[in-house]
Length: 67
Image (tube, rainbow, N blue to C red):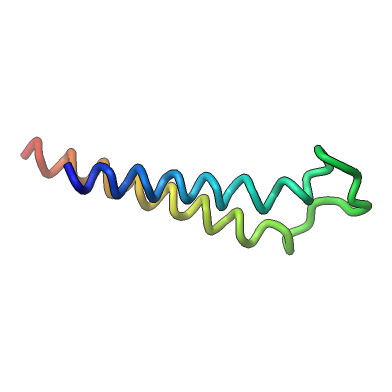
């Protein structure tokens, strides 16, 4: 059960890393004057990788429990 809370915590951190750095560059809050370039997507891509890794770990643990 401890692993489940660790995966949920990692997914939450990943979502925060995915959304929060992207908000200022998204032109949703205020116009920033440039198109979203790859330089503003490095940190959100780290959040995406955290989410994918946590989901993979969660699915692997469930797979091991079924065996």
